[in-house]
Length: 491
Image (cartoon, rainbow, N blue to C red; front, side, top):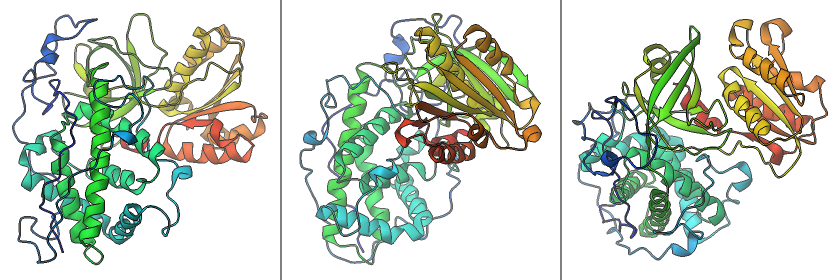
């Protein structure tokens, strides 16, 4: 059994810190007059944001064994020099070249991109899949041991993570394993990793962090896949991880040329629509480009380094303001802070825009929109986007809620319907109709010539996709944000 203490070769492209390392500190101190354009001089200074003191130990289950203990004797670890991977990155991904302007959600590869049968693929891919099959039954132990190794061997990286690791715990490792499993599918791999690389900038991730993560990844895998681990398997993982990290670093470096890692944003209005739903409007300190239907990640001053996703509740506005609909959920740290604690004048941070649930203005297809609860926010943005483009295409909105009380934005949607004759809004209330929102669309239609958009609770999206496919809407015309990200956004 190897502990893999060899040095992971650092990828070659460097990426400036851009003042994001550490997070926390006093970054949320309100400014008297937030800037409305141009770079923020304080943001450019590497030490502009003080690194906070090391937070409490992570709230993860203890590792199965002492990660600092001497490893069980075994074959000598392999030391490898990474091969060049620039051929895997599409044009524009290398350092110094602009990244593609379209930003999407870092969603896991779709079912259509699932790797082939276990017996097919490159030699490295076969070894990767064998390892995955070995560790899947003990995934929780692998995750705990991975973080134990990371924080014991590299305590300086602890400040990049939240003090409480409950929700963060398995995301990093899961993302790395997902990427490794698709090592033979270059198109899927590069697209997925570029999104991750750009998104990780807001955490303060730097190129020198990647070898440390790779070392601990291999340390955890070698321990829990001991039955099949050997020098060939380790060599495959070193090559695979070096590929993964290089693509992410190059994407982050290219992204630095066109956008900050995060934006300050001052809350300008806080409208409590119901006891647990607030419409929060903010003014970013720099221009914030996004598309209607996208979302962003939000960090509050009360829970440093904990980011949650919220959709934009309007199309881009001429005044540059951004709005979000936030529902406080039980034990939801960020959502409760934004609903019950935030006030005008407070400063939050925003990550880059993400998500592909946007309107294709090159077609005249109708739009079928299903919005449940606060999921009506991006649907409202899509309606505004169609209106601003002057399109006369049909837009059918189903606004779902459990009770009348939950239709907190119905007046806004009905005003839009009065203004735009091509728009139809139907409220579907579960307790009155005794029917779930997705099922209501069965009585209308046909929808086979419509582009479908879904936004709301994960359960609604899953059942909505099933119903839409059942009534003849092609899968490629159904758009929604990653269900996995939506689950994470619920707190």
